[in-house]
Image (cartoon, rainbow, N blue to C red):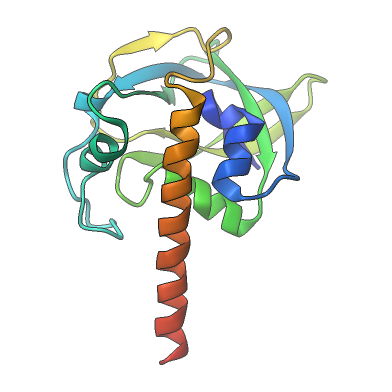
Length: 181
């Protein structure tokens, strides 16, 4: 169960990232987290050892979004802090596509677990992505009332198409190498 916030709470985004038009998603509230905004100049300009490519998250953002980029991030907060989003039921490949979109292996975001609450009060253990270690934010915003997109949705969809294709190409090359061993 993946908790998507910001643009990833929206069906059109998640369908574009995963390639699955039949995703199951339910609105939920993630407790204990604050919704933040990070600017392009605050994105790490470091190539982390876990990176599958030799380029920093900041360079990828600049190449695809330009100088005026902003994104939502969440970070741990108080028990009373909440972020509204969507719990998505994803396959393993779909989760990896989302992880790649969020540049987890490149060290920008990091994996996190939490507990989200559905409208009917049912609690669900989820996985999501949070602000990476030692990163700055521009501001904290209301996690209950916010616009899902900080950029135009069509810009997201343009960049997703490129990112998804590149990830699947890397995956295909990796499988080819394994089959030759």
